[in-house]
Amino acid sequence: MLEKLTEAVIAFLVISGLAYVIGTGIASAAENAVRKRQADVGLDGRLQKLGILGQRLQSRKDKMLPRLAKLDAELKSARRRHYMVNKKILDLKMARSQLMRVLGEEDAFLRMERPARKFIANIVNRHVQRAQMDQKEHPFLSRAWSRTQQATIWAPTIGDAKLMVEKSFPPATGFFIASIAEPQGDGEEDLTALESAEMEAVAQERGG
Image 1 (spheres, one colour):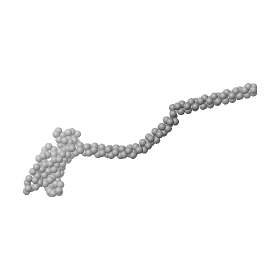
Image 2 (cartoon, one colour):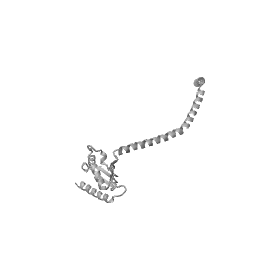
Image 3 (cartoon, helix red, strand yellow):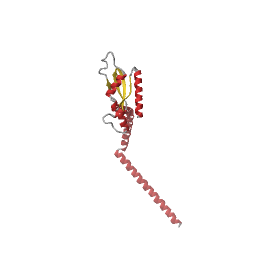
Image 4 (spheres, rainbow, N blue to C red):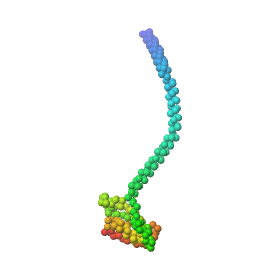
């Protein structure tokens, strides 16, 4: 029994050794074949070329970084200009209804004995305001009249200026002089009286 076991162990060792030798030989042959194939296709040369190409790409990247930074700054500047242009266009759209309205300029300086004075009036249309509050459109006036619109009047006195404004913008059609003043500060007494009368008119209208 012991002899058979010994023979079996010896046979196993012999077979294992042969398998190891055969496996090593096969692995060595495969390695040699791979090396030979790599040598045939010039793998070392290709790896060297790829290394050189990588260095060139890195160099090109380093050279492009300052240019990219400059282009980024120019892009940000262009975006700022685009924003400012759009803002200006929006402001123009908002102000397109703010026309330059000048009254009495034709004969402003014809009367030497009573030279014309310059007044600034802020006018609003209450019919348009009421239509806007009701979410409607006025039949023939722009919605801009829901806000005060400025007019320049050349007249001898503030009373004449008020009459001139009311003639061009009749109160019967909803126009109301929110304020009227002389930019130089003259005619303060007339201005105070007119503003008091306007405040009384507003109070009466609101009360009605």
